[in-house]
Length: 76
Image 1 (cartoon, rainbow, N blue to C red):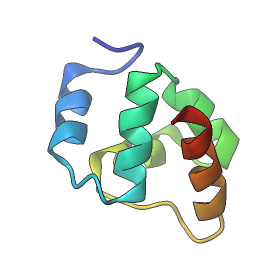
Image 2: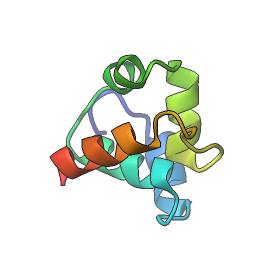
Image 3: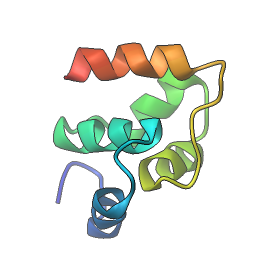
Image 4: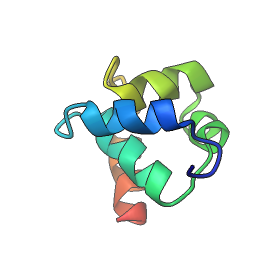
């Protein structure tokens, strides 16, 4: 199991559409063991919101998209 991530979330992330920004963020965070709490704090959202992004249920809003893209670049 990756740091703090359940196997269920990891499987849901793998099954989700990688073209979605939140799913891409999730794969990188899981791979690099970045805790959800750190991601949530960085973008000013709840942990549940981050879990939803990772599962492809929601997407980052327009006010944080560019911040997420920069964060993704820092992990890639």
